[in-house]
Length: 195
Image (cartoon, rainbow, N blue to C red; front, side):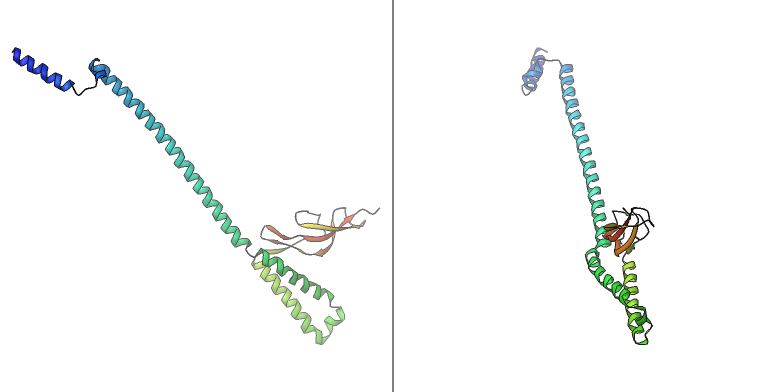
């Protein structure tokens, strides 16, 4: 039996030869407790890292969604207001048609030779107004309304007792909107109290 105990002791010594020194002096319970504590700390660090990663993913998703919404709005605006520059240029054509019609005296309107010309100019003006309407371009109302600096540009003050001060009494040039944006302000004369 002594030989048997000695061989067991030799076997235990061989097993312990690969174990670090710090674990040889402590009891098994302490060793397990330290290993568990170390694993718990590592697990806690991993959980924290996971939470940080989850937050970063949520922020990235939110930012991506915001960028997508901004791009969709930019695309909608580009579609809605793409014709703005062209429309501004065509407004001068509309102004000239309006001036041409206003310049024709009543006597020429009744002349059989001029009726066709007047009718043609008026038809062209109606067609242009129809095309403007199809593209969301509308005329700004002005005469008889109070001055709105977002839509009207006061060019002069007109002394009068017939209207309240700040009321538009004359329109020199029509103003237009394209959908909900100002295309060109109406140039107007505004009433003021006489001196």
